[in-house]
Image (cartoon, rainbow, N blue to C red; front, side):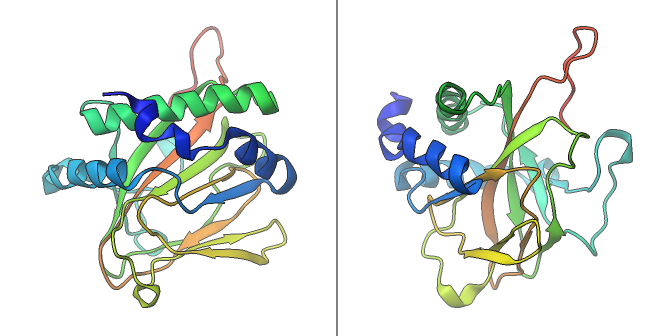
Length: 215
């Protein structure tokens, strides 16, 4: 199956690059096709409860769970299914196109499914602290059909002065991309289970030819 036929015609690389250059973030209401989003949602539903991990905070040896801060569960994408492979291949193409336009030096991409059960949330946080991580760009892709305005679950995006700049519903196929160091954000509790793919484009912070590992 041709990945680009499913996803990339909806991605205007110049539009994404210009949004990141001018504002540091961009929202794509139709980031991926409904078909691919529903295939990914079906892939999520095949995973058993014991295949999900309670999400933690902190990196590497400092990683720990804290349900006062976040209550989502995660499952990493590895390309093990056709839907995962299609998404990861398209994400890598986006990496190459953004490197051409913005010279970001993006080295790789990692991502996981995120499941927020009814009432689950993630308090305000940033995905990268300046000078302490190799995460450059954050992506969030939503997989929720028929999401209603009154069901909650919004992503709140703030600027560096902690002013709210956007409130985004997790609608099917929508996507947001932003600079990982610059935008605090939070996930509000929802009236129903909410699914997304959280991902990060990273630089290569290798030391002695060893690539900095994923968190």
